[in-house]
Amino acid sequence: MFLDDYHSRPDSRFCITAEQASRFAKRVAGDFNPIHNPDARRFCVPGDLLFALVLARFGLSQRMTFRFLSMVGAGVPLSFDEDDDGRIRVRDDGGKCYLEVERGGDVTHDEAVVEAFTRCYVAFSGKNFPHYLKPLMEDSGVMFNPKRPLVIYDSMGFSLERLDGIAPGLELADASLKVIGKRADALLEFRIVAAGEEVGTGSKKLVVSGLCDYDAGVMDGVVEEFYRLKAAHEAEA
Image (tube, rainbow, N blue to C red; front, side, top):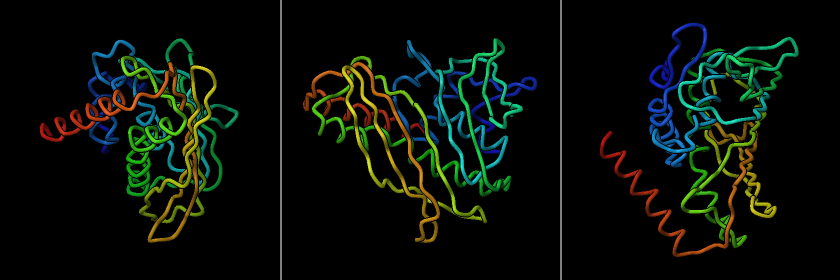
């Protein structure tokens, strides 16, 4: 399974090291958010890795909604369980819930279909910054604190018309940013396409914290650093 390099299962639980999480963010998602660096003070496991593990364990459903309730630190043993109410929950040994998933419709466990959908969504999701967030922040005249950029995954959901062997791609349909004091909610809406045909839709919500006035020069430096890190990682790979 393509996720084997990004987690371990010493027992019935899942465990993700900081190094595994960081590799997933960079290799699979193309996400160079410093919060996923192993030495980050506020390190957290990428929400997209939890998303991917849920699909690998429970399959891909036609309709799914993911709510990210808290950030996962390095090396936290996690259980992925379907509760009596039909919801999937990711918890630690103390019962703290990090992710809650609702689903409906048909389900496929075809590994090729699940992996293809996972990869296309994660690649889309990894483009949060700078591709989607930078123009939104610029238009709104705000930006995150460049010294402590904090962009948190809040929720995502999608609906598929069919599951029969689709090889999908995701396209941004619309994007908006709602500023609320020192934070903002970013909504990214997307189309799911296969063979030139729309086969589904979805959306993703992000929370951007620690807002300040937009500074084009500073933001250009942040973007330049993003691409420097990306180029360095690709050279190493």
